[in-house]
Structure formats: structure tokens, C-alpha cells
Length: 92
Image (cartoon, rainbow, N blue to C red; front, top):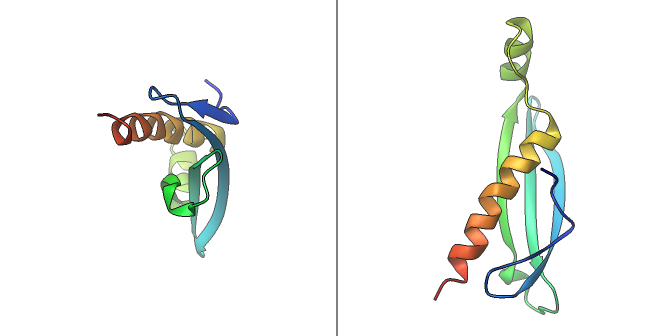
């Protein structure tokens, strides 16, 4: 699965999807996926999901030859959650 640049909700609204990541501590990275409605003047209408990743946990997984999620895998999981959130938000 690939996170698209835009999405349509079941109610027909169009959103631009914006990905970002940044450090929130010395050993933590926050991955954010934000849906911004097209033609909306109010930024409060944005819908956002995020996940923090701890570097120590990743290093432990590497040391034990376990699966380490890539940033793309993390964004795909966030995309799955965001789709559900958008549809639930626009449900009648």
C-alpha cells in the first residue's frame, strides 16, 4: 500500500495528505500524517494522526533480529487509521 497525496472520503470531501516527521526528544521521533481539506479556510478542520517511535526500542529489535518498521510502513499504518477517522468524522 502507498499513502496517496490526496484522498476522497465516503462523503465526497477531498483532502490533501501531508506527511512529516520530527524529533520530539533525544531518542524519539514523531511521525505525523495530516489530512487538510481542500478549499477549507479553517485549519481546525485538519485531521491528524501520529505515532512516536523510540530509538532504544528500534535498536533492541535490531539486536534481536526482529522486524523493524520502516518509516513508509509507519505512514501506511497511520494512513489506515486516518481513513477510519475521516469516515467516522463525516458519518451522518
